[in-house]
Length: 251
Image 1 (cartoon, rainbow, N blue to C red):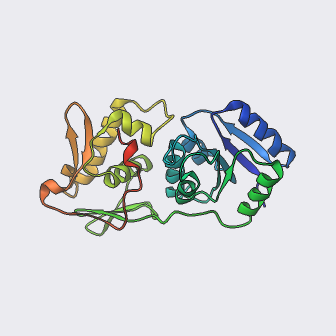
Image 2: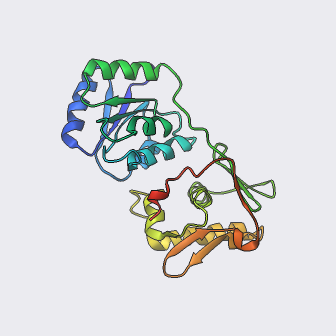
Image 3: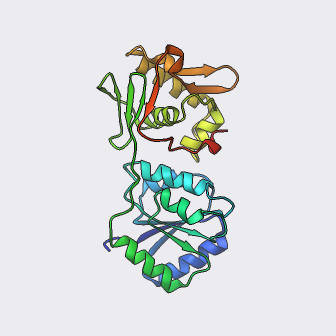
């Protein structure tokens, strides 16, 4: 293993400290993330060689797995190895973790030697990857793996934030999203992002789509928020896979 940089993401500070001591004794450099917000941004800013991600244990679809899917869907962070730490009590939690892109799932309580052995095993092979589908809506085709939007088969230049926005809207089409939801799902932990910032980014996205007469795909629902919809123009939605974002997190 060339790198030994480990990021531990667990809101339980006492548990995080104990795990940090174990890993440091094992020769790893350890960083802790004990807040609910900002994990994706922190991983993207300085990708660790491995993320130890604590599941909350209350549901197989908890927020940790949504974070993991987003991490694995982003080419900049998809190569980060991830081990999910859980108590195994939630029904289907281990399967949900692996389906979300985890390299391994370890049940607490665990022995220090077992965890270190599993970490070494994971880091000796390529990180698990999600199969990222292409999304098609009307004249738009979005390819997350290539981080590219196409309109009428022509590539469209988008900023990183604009691509995140159109990807989320396209993969959750026909659903109305409030500004608070968009901030939580796309820019969690970024204090500079306000409701007005969301409005500005929507306008910029519409301006780009407007160059191809597709601005009406992004609709305003007055007093609520925004949605992506093409059916109103008589065009059929198509996708090579089901939505990658959990409907439970859309409210």
